Length: 100
Image (tube, rainbow, N blue to C red):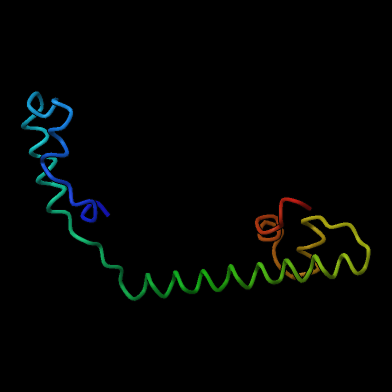
């Protein structure tokens, strides 16, 4: 991300403090220029994708349970949503909308 900034030495010189801290600024500037892009492995990418799909599935279950509870005129609580959706209490609490 820092490579995308394309910093120049002039970016540090504009405030006049560059000369006071020249050795520190030069070190910083060199380190920023040499930062490598991090490439994620296949396993990390697959894990991220699996987690996203689990989150989407959990949100669908919570929304379906809320709609079912509304049809049955039952109180919408995290416990009732978890029981109706067949998910854990913590997951139901996590994805339960704030306006309910």
